[in-house]
Image (cartoon, rainbow, N blue to C red; front, side):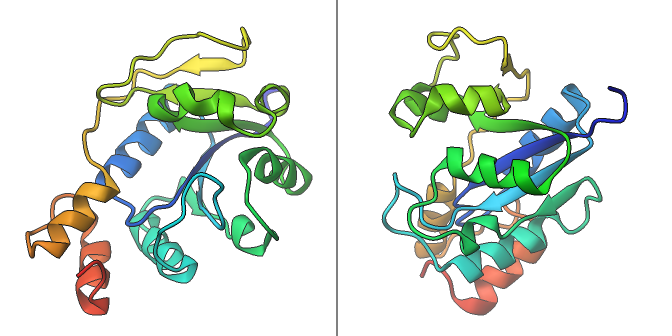
Length: 192
């Protein structure tokens, strides 16, 4: 059992990836003694309709995590056909990886999990780590599973939406995103 890898899975639009994503990933990695965290930029998410092209979000995420040897990135959602549901992503990861998967979600996502495709099956395939988000209470309200873990990660009140709005207003974002991401956004003229 000691040799089984513990792999965190952090999905999202990452439009753009920000310091909050990195703080949460590192905090959860340490708190739950994970071996690594895989960042998975969303391909064709069922709950979102407007976002930057996949290649742009993937590159920004690559830049954001490149200095942390415990972080890696996967393009699994880009190569999947159709809507990319979390359950399908986890099934594909289980085929490719050996180890226990820990899906990392925010308390905002936790409250919406009952609207996801096959949430009960998802809890049979992986453990779910629920991270606190400001203004969203974490409760073990449904599914009653021992595979639901509550994180003590710090509350991070940064969102990609806020960052996009700041760029649009020509406001500085240098302390909200990694410097490499800030440079990329400025060089590509994103979100203006």
